Length: 277
Image (cartoon, rainbow, N blue to C red; front, top):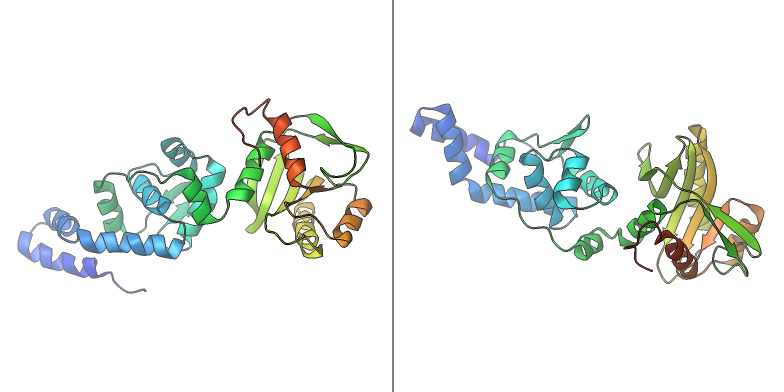
């Protein structure tokens, strides 16, 4: 809530007792452990990212302070970790300097570094807490794509009846661009992109999803990207207005659950552990 932390004020008391700055600091870390524990719970609460918040804060304090180091330590892919880190950064207790993540409160960082790194919660619970499971799974599917074609005989897969759809291998998978959240952003050859919007709920997807994905398309195009494919992913179908947009826009794919699983069948050649939707 701002101001000087309680435990920082206590440091002076410990210095008067120990008459040594280092000893006073270590006394602070030991005696005020409850205060630091409560602070960590506050970070978790405000980040709204669940128990993995604690793992990340402890790991960063111990030197696993880049996205790649955290991914290697946790075994969690970078594109899952990135949105979690963004949530924690919004609390102010974590900042990013270049490629490194830092805990600006030095006493809090030192206390975290003294503790063992807690165990990770199960991956499904991480995704459920973050409510990014569906989008993250679709991004993982895109990561596993390579150059192949699928024939959409009656339009039930991709909303393009009688067309053979070509898919490509992408080298970069992201969920944001220029500070704008994007469900799916895949890039190849530095400037060719796939942009997508995911809707998993029971509501039939209407024109608002198309408007959103097109805003993201225009953002990419304004920054000199060529958007070759546009996805709207839905378990529950599409309104006639959206279906008409697919007929008007040859880049637009309306991907059903069956379409996702058709892509998984192909992608398992490259990623055998990827699961069906």
